[in-house]
Length: 279
Image (cartoon, rainbow, N blue to C red; front, side):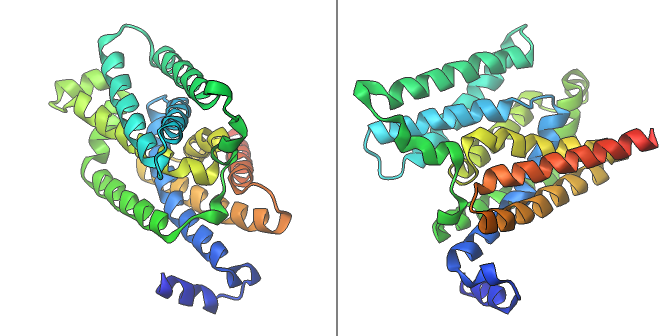
């Protein structure tokens, strides 16, 4: 962190005079590639509401952790979200229901259970507002290191199995006929989303986490001609809008997660306009 702080001190930006802004900027630089890469798989696999469902399960895990008196309820949320993701993959593979229906079942159950636990015995729901809105400015160095490790693991997975993941998302039957272990790759994909959503939820907020995992790839898909452009543009959009949203939220004293989401919405609108123009 000392090296990062020293580097920030060389940059001519007033908001980087504060350590909490240096930490927040580093988190954005880590979450940008994570959101950008995972977004392409979510949009390609038509699982846009899956991250929202995972966010609800993460909230339930946090509520359980708080109820049990855990010092770090986030770890309880990670475990429950991973279990939720694996259970979703299992049920989806054994059911004739469409993916969005299965997601709806899990999402509604998770959010209901979370609210039930949070308000049990007259508990106050306001204590969970941080997880709903997010607070990127209070991130700690330990959390940054953990997110960096997750980013490294996702990049390694992407380098080795990205083509198989894409084929599995587009056409599971074709992937299976070519010897691709479809259920294994689906499990890896869902677990990766579960971990990222759970670790990021307290920083960007449950209410916008789904948008942050959908908009980068949705906008990139409007103007991309191949998979490489699609992935690169999605990552760049997440990074640029993330930095712009963080800086804007600092000067306007508003939610960073919501501001980033609005920038990504503008990105989608612009690329949609370009798509219409070139069609």
